[in-house]
Image 1: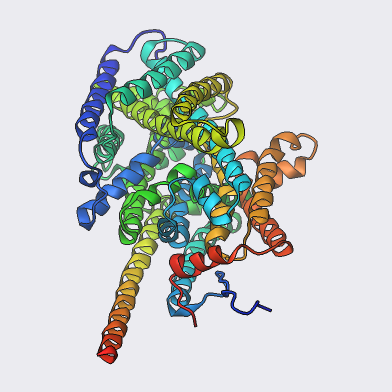
Image 2 (image 1 turned 90 degrees about the vertical axis):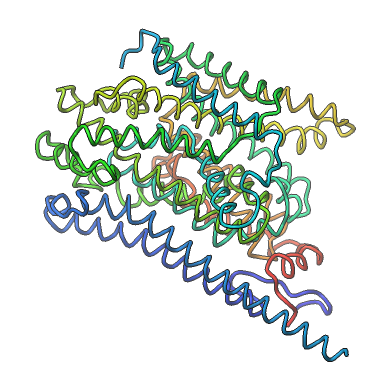
Length: 114
Length: 509
């Protein structure tokens, strides 16, 4: 039980307020995309290596590179950049919406005062 | 590579590059910081990104990564992913919030968030340990380059390299020089990519984007010389690969000199977009580095030189070897040497100055001399800088691994200590000082366990290799922090209120 008058704490799993809740939601989505890409790709590459002829990985090429070199060395860093860009666009819009609502609130509050 | 003669042309190129950077630093010393990328707007964010990338690029990126590819092939991809993927963690979990804390160093943050002098001192000691390990990797790179440039053997090259670093810092300080990081990044990236374009062009590959062009060399190595690049997990297990990768990511989000970039940017949006640009600039290097390792092997194979997998020093120099054996003019090889030296010098100078400041600000007045005046602190910082240089120099004489491996140990320590303390400090208001202290101590124990117990407990060395311990270690530290925090008194009301209202922008419901 929280002591009366004591401020309620926060955590990643128990966010509070609309701002933090939506921020946690988008952070979770980005982290899910990040983790799935890293682990998922290595699992796929490992399964290809174990279950098929080793020649498969060298024969499958993209832009001259063996597919596992391209996927891990080139695509993943690019994917990280894409994730960061999406996160920033969302945060910018989100910050804009918050600012709008704050301003509306202030104008309304000002009107009531008058 | 000839180690017995002085390389006059490369030496001239090195001198030229340092003269350019020093002249630019002297010009920028008198200007306002806002002119150099800390102002808002598009250009400002690009500048912040260049500063982040220039701050990041060290001997490990410039020399060490290619060496790892040369020796270990696909395993080295874990470094590429670890050193880029960590920025996603940093951006989504920390960049904005750290900026809102408004503290200037990692110990400052820990001291403020956890309200504990002990936690702050511990964070300062750990930051200094990270500085020392990371600097050893840089000193090794400097010594190898000095050895090649002056035609001297490794041990005297370490001493000459250390003297050059100390002189560089003293002269920079005396002249009031500021680093023009935008210029430095663009000089470094040019010095890294231009020789690669020339090499791939010479080979008749797709040279406009050598990051793709080198794929033809992998095919040639496989078909004509029997190098098996098609079995990525033949020598290492997926667990080992992922352990290294995640350790480097946690470490990236916990390295004090990386985190400190976010305290200095003017706005939260700038901090966030600066990370994206920084990541792009860093990725440019990591898209290119594997090519040097692959091309070095190809040139050796074509020349009939047998692959030498047991010489880590030669592997750390493959960037220069590839350019040399590829028949590029000496000035181009010099450009690579100059880029490597410049990256290592700026990193080591920044790290050691931060380490000395941490000693004089966080440890000296608190543990050694409580009544220290500002002058005393300044002398303590200077004395500690020299001591730090001497310690790093001695450790570099007998390094235990390659440049990238030594750097990875610093990442493991940061990932096991600073990263969990920052993560829970930002995202869990119940985390308290006792939890942070126990967590950091556990992190130190986990990082040193492979060295202390690895011999007698082989399973431990497999579960937590020295360079990859944070994959298992960081979650353990987080659990320890949570258990201890829950078992002890919660943090004070003011701290929770600051975290809830100012850091996470939560209004009362």
